[in-house]
Image 1 (cartoon, rainbow, N blue to C red):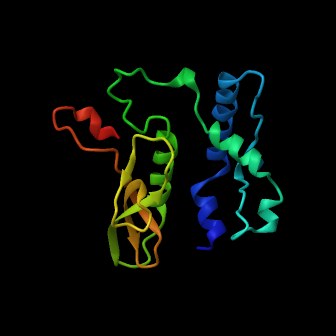
Image 2: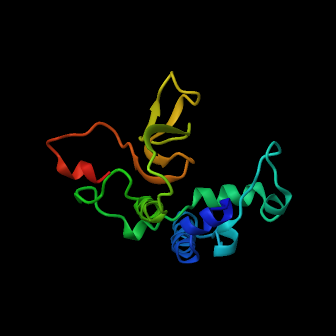
Length: 175
């Protein structure tokens, strides 16, 4: 599977559109005078740093526009579950993305029977209750994710670590 095919398999147009609408809504909820007004085509674009810059991608969107999109990503405050809702979980804002990706990863056919389950750290140093610190990793701060991959490195499933499990509170297993 080519990288672009892999991306298109994970992020179909319908899913991109399900990100665009709440992103635009959230930007207005955050500041009515500064709407995001993005669309599916723009949402697919990326900005590359000078070390890995690809002109055909980076020339489409400014770094400031990418930052604006990132700060308004698919949140609609009117659809948030209440704090007491047992279905809420720590990933409730990202649950649609996580569930969609898990489904797509599971759909990728196994080409071999050599599988590996490993812990990975996705680098991140921003504000989040989900970040972990591990001094033994190349990236010390980030999100801990357990990943099922094949021998080619293709992901077939994953689980995001959301903190210590509380056996007295089964709702916490929803993560």
